[in-house]
Image (tube, rainbow, N blue to C red; front, side, top):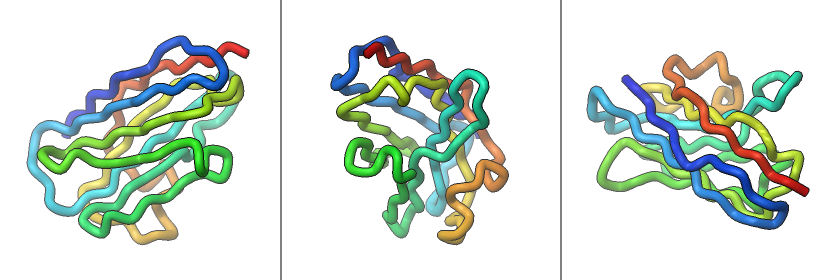
Amino acid sequence: VQLQASGGGLVQAGDSLRLSCAASGRTFVYYTMGWFRQAPGKEREFVAAIRWTAGSTYYADSVKNRFTISRDSAKTAVYLQMNALKAEDTAVYYCAFHPGMLVVSAVRSSANYGNWGQGTQVTVSS
């Protein structure tokens, strides 16, 4: 499975961005896709995830009520709508894929995703 992420950029605090991540190579009925981010000098952290076909979504506390993860019904793809961006959201954002529905307790750990996109830079100026 190859993942292609896009949509990053340079924005001002309070602006919005939408990240996209498409998986190619196979068609999956059940999967878990997530977004993680890594800021300079920091460890990679969980941002959001969606389990399909359950349709359940999960968010880090730091992005809850500002970010929304959704899927594309026509293909294996997810989006991350990021609103009210803050300077602390600045990071490289990575999409990740697991071929199946992870148990709820596992969606926040990067170790449970075997496929990763190349990362897309999000920079928020204050």
